[in-house]
Length: 271
Image (cartoon, rainbow, N blue to C red; front, side, top):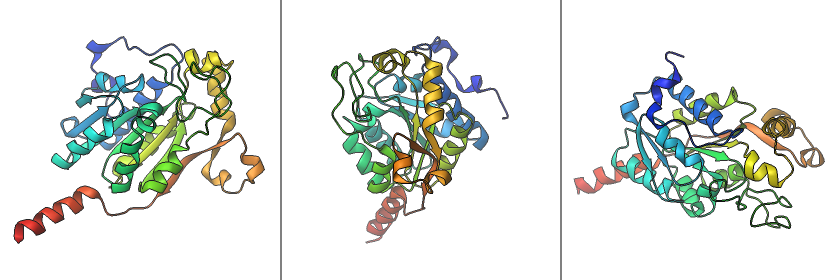
């Protein structure tokens, strides 16, 4: 790494708001390490976030940043990319922010294959607003709005975005911290919609409600339940029960939206 990641931070905004044991700092550090490896010009980076614990990350980084409204990070990011296609646009969002109120925007941004890099801080809960269950809260787990256990089926966000049209999809965990920058780097290099789901811990709300108040135990749970994609592909359905896959899950270049938009403009201007 050519420089300390502190150079990418707005240190006057610290201390941060994240609780002890929260994995969001691990993810933010990994994103900055990926940016540094790619030697990107910070003036040509736009970081967009919505609302939630994770979305506060945009306020801590020294790039062009937008802290937008709940669920609308991808709409703002789409506008930025269409207006300034030369920018590297990174969306830092939470599982509730992008898949509940922002779920429709997520599938259409993926469908368009617009060149956005979405990093999800997926802690399976609404941490900032009191611990309500989110679309990724596992079935039977507890939350402030599911005191008797969640009966909803959880979204697999990677399967969702892949089916919608994303050209790059990956997943990791905060336990596998060294893997995250590699996936983010490959996502940024992809010319199209890149989606990276990072499983992280919320020991305060999710953990306490589900008898896992210790952050170290939550990291161990990530370690014990994650399976590399190569291993996953040879596992039986029974072996996959209660486990999840990590790594590069899908990488298939496809026509990108802003390129198609530019070509359409050139065509219509020539008429």
